[in-house]
Image (cartoon, rainbow, N blue to C red; front, side, top):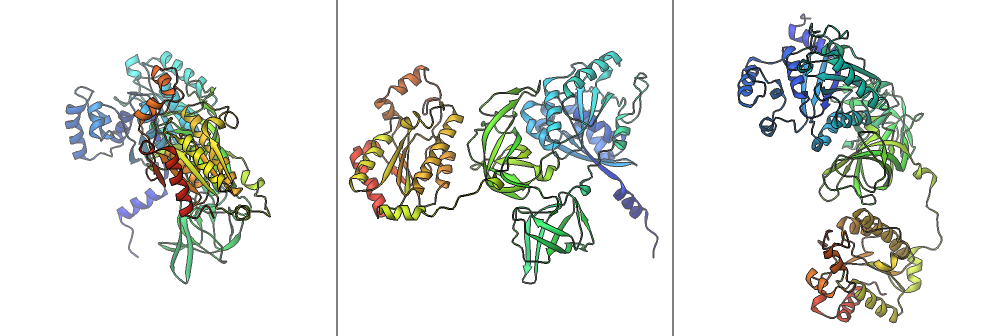
Length: 628
């Protein structure tokens, strides 16, 4: 056999090195990008052409005079260079003789907190920079709290620009003491404070004579030796199933990346949701079968038995299964410009599973400056809250403190598909295991047959004054005259009882329609034709109401009346009060109305009398078989 080449020796040595993922974070202009650039420069990982380009860019974009502006190594976007700020997360790889590193440079601006959270979610350690001239700022506290929330347990407090404070030990000690008071409740395992000057390399890769009073190690030496081994291979086995691998009739495997633990052929595994167990027959990879696989490995398992498994299921250790529930409590970092509305339906992506979800209650918001719990009904951009979540179906999960992969989730807007929130599960509310549907002998079909009709929700929506209640009332009168069984839920009437505790904020409007949708569903189950007359301004909530029942049990009736006519009618004087400012959050004036995009029926109220429109709606019901 030929002796290994120098390249092969080098690659083999690299494979044996441990990997540290860390991020730099902190407030604006604390020097995060400069620090990373200095690390890359001092570890001699820059090619000559990169250095030449950096020197040229420093003269054009730099902020350090004749010196090299190391921040430009990671601030690659044109907007970042022009504005002198970091906007998006930038990842860089470097290595020393002792360790490999992947570092994430994250933005300092509050508006880019979501980007910082993205970097933190994959990191084992955070370097929190503080400008020695400014001390601990609100954004410093925000980033420290989010780092803690996202499972980072190791912190380096890098007090940067210490050269601008004459390398003062007094300034350094005061900043460290201030930060430690705040961080006392954040559950960091290690906190190391280092005075540095990223621009001049003081205490970055080597100890500096400029700070003889500092007796700790340089930043790089600490990063090379800090023990952040998460020991994922020693946690209970978890394999979120990405897809069912079925290339032919003779092979059926379950593919995914192991989130925790280890597995061998012959091991017993359980499907977390169903509890069904089987034995691992093979561990298949692109490089052939394996005798063992551990956390982080992408594999395909084949099992000895035919077990019902699909994408989104989790294979687990039968002796240490994850929780399975349709409700849990969790922290949530809100990432969208449009506020979170409890009760509104979003999509939740947890591991490989995606299901509809709503925050059923917001327990409190968290003041990231003081860590106090604050009352609130909604979450705005970059706010953090804690509350209960209700899923459309049970999922398998672990607390986030035990597993980032099976305890962390994102929320997705159902209409735009944008990621709007990042969540960390605290504990299961155990609803899936202790609350069950009670079997009933008389069902919806039997009740409807007894009444000689087909149950349905007629959902009237439109602006205030459009004629919803008038037309709905006439429809019900005509149906009852024909001997049909109905019930009318009117917006004003419901607010005198079922929803008397709700106001007219967006959050209360969402909860108003959620309750009405659930009540209407019960009436449909009773075999009734139920009519609802609500402004219901948001498409998301009308869609939620539709999905509560069968696809043929919901008819959206859009009473399309121009707002000018509604204002002229103004039967309750509400538009006049809203325009005068005495009524807030009034739909059509200072709160939006999202008109239906594909309603089942469109009623142009101004083109005929309410009686004519009512007759047309009844005719529609008859033509579609709802009246028997």
